[in-house]
Figure 1 (cartoon, rainbow, N blue to C red):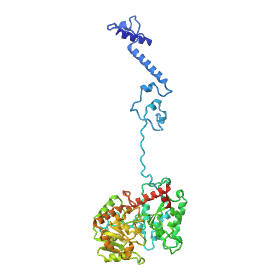
Figure 2 (cartoon, rainbow, N blue to C red):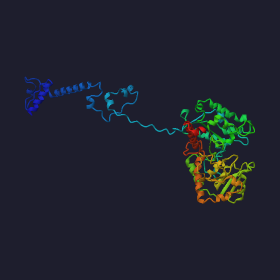
Figure 3 (cartoon, helix red, strand yellow):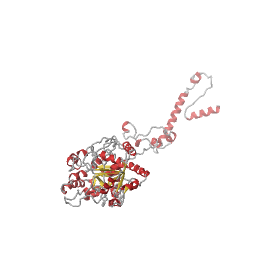
Figure 4 (cartoon, rainbow, N blue to C red):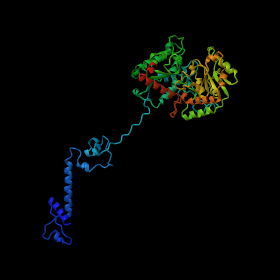
Length: 524
């Protein structure tokens, strides 16, 4: 103990202080006075030691300011739970140090903040730019609806965004909602209305996967069909001139543009300026040929455009509406082997239609619905009457109409009735986007020449198909329903892929190929 006290005394002398230790029991007067030297108390000793220690620390810290790392940074590391770094550029104005002015010590010890990944853009590669055309190209045509067709008033047919008047259940033929008296030539209006609610519209053409031109070509073509060629072509030429002045058009010369023409190609492919010839020259215009045109039937000699389904009477709002209708068709009682709904075409004596009338009329297993009346329960313009025939039959005969295709094909699919074609051009080479590649899974083909030459009995051919095969084919037809109907364009609850969605995807894919310089895309 004596040696330890001696050592402590020597250490204190180094600091310039003399310390005297006294044994217990010494008088207080002897320790503090009584003629002796006045010595500092223990509190004074501690204060002096503390002052010396912090002076030493300050000396070491000031000697390492230039390096940014010194003894202090080693001895006093930042705590792991220290406050996060300030990220706001206005921090200095609030009395805080901006990140670029943090002390070297804080910068050395701080960990970088976690970086959150930006959410994926669900519209990437799907953006559509829709032109805001002058109303003479679309809305004004609808307003002038009484002049759209020579033979009847189109105003009721363009109502409800082109779907026509709402229908009831027609005595149980239809489901409770989603049914309209839709005309086959109002697709331009329906498509435009659907596009207005498209989730990936953009106002920036540079972001667009494709550019949509909402010109009502079918309405314009119909109103002047019996007028002079100059009047028929006037609005289409006006549209081309208007587009050519837009920078969006000049970017690719219209090769990234698309439009809808809700008629057959025959109505837009007049080759000469002769009033006696049918239709307009819209699809023969070089500028329009650069575009993709969605049309009800393409030309068998030129496949530049894409065929899309005719509009039907059904415009569901949700997938639940579709599922309910599909279930209804699965349970439908089908008492007829096959059926045909149509009118005689005296001008087509060389076609299969006269023989269909003869064979169906002579068979006890065929339901023949002759469209003779202009209105009423025996008219093909009565949606309920036609659909009642299709819903009660296994097979529905689909010969060519005025052209290769028929709107009735899609009404039959809607009714779960297996289509029977007499020419591959009536569906197989047309609606490749919307119908399966294996036609035998959902349809029957009986060549028209075999029937017209009376080499084949339609009834015998269909009766040979096994019942289990018929059921499988019907199920495939019923599964096709959502892909061939156009959802109600006013609905914001469309949660299934309809004919509109399939068509838009095909356009985007074609434009993408063209932009990549794909040989096939350029040829189209």
